[in-house]
Structures are given as structure tokens and as C-alpha cells.
Length: 104
Image (cartoon, rainbow, N blue to C red; front, side, top):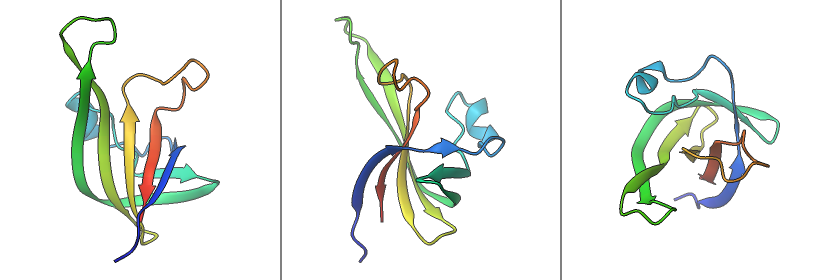
């Protein structure tokens, strides 16, 4: 069994490669191609999908959807866990919404 490595770095989706079907359901469109550390990867299969929610940050009792998670197989023979943040972490990282969480 291959070991899983924690990464937690932003990825850059390749324009025009987003999953349009997911977008029609109000979900982020998983990019089928993206770059990480100056190398392009292609997601060939979605192995698992899940969502993460959390309480309102302003004290109300409501729950909010925070992240969309995807475990994908790539054409490069890797298994990657990606996630999309519904809200950017900070103004400094406002464009970084897609992240590579782990790689196997």
C-alpha cells in the first residue's frame, strides 16, 4: 500500500476543464486538469466525494457548507485528495479556492 502524504497547498485549475454537471447542481466544478508545483495533472476518475459543514462564525445556530472534498485518481498514477473552499481563508489568499490536501 502506498503511503499518503500531507500537502495542503493550492492548485491552479486549467481553464475550461471544470465539471459542468457539478456546477449545474450548485457545486464547484471539479477541474479535470490542474497544475501543482508547475506540473499539470489530469483527474481521470472521481473515487469519492463528500462535504464538510460548520457552524456560523457570527454566533447564529445555523450550519454552513464549508468545503467540497474529492478523492481522485490521476493519469499520472497518483491518488489525490482535493478540496474547494466555499470562502477564501483570507484576503491574501482570496484566489486560492482549490487545494491539494493529500497525495498517495
